[in-house]
Amino acid sequence: ASFHGDTNGLATVPILKALDEAWRVSYPDHRFLFGLDANTQKVHGPNCQGWADFESVFSARGMGSCWGPAPSLSKAWTTRNARTYLQPQLQKAVGAAEAARKGDLNLKDWILFYDEQVTCEVGDTARDNTGDRTFAERMLFPTVMFPSDHAIVSALLTLKPAPPPSEEDTVDTPEAAAAAAPSGPVAP
Image (cartoon, rainbow, N blue to C red):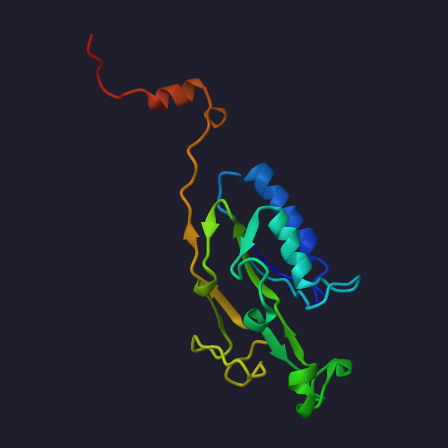
C-alpha cells in the first residue's frame, strides 16, 4: 500500500488504522508493506502528527519501520527544505541565511511492515536526495537536479517464512478433497 499524507499528517494515523483493520479482516494471508509520506513532524500536537507518536501507534499494532525502533531525527530526516519568497505560501518563506535553521527538517517518509512478516536492519535503509543514490546531509532540497522536497527512501527487507496454515485455515469441502486425492488409476 502507499499513501501521501495531508500537510500536517493528521490523516496518517486514521489511514494506518484502517489499513491495519482491512489487512487483519480481509488479507491475513498476505504480506503487508506500506510506503508512505506521513508528513510527520518533530513535535506532536493538536494540529500536527508527531513522528514519535506515530511510531508508538504503529508499534502498538505489531508493526516496525525501516528506521527501527525510536528513530533518531539526526540520522533519519527525509525533508530539508525552505520556501523562498518566489514560491506560493509566502507565510512559510524564509531568507537564505535562515534556511537551515528555520526550514522544514523532519522525518516524514516511512516504510512499514508487520514485524512477524519482515525484518529490516537499520543499516539497510538509505536516503537519497541527489538522484545518484547518495545523501548530501547539508543540502537543502529540492534542487534543479533533484526536484523533490522529500528524499527517496529505500530499504533492504527480508521476508520471514510464512507460518504453516492452522487446521482452522484448512477447508473441508468435496472440492478440496478431490484436489488432494491422487490422480490416475487406483490399485485394488
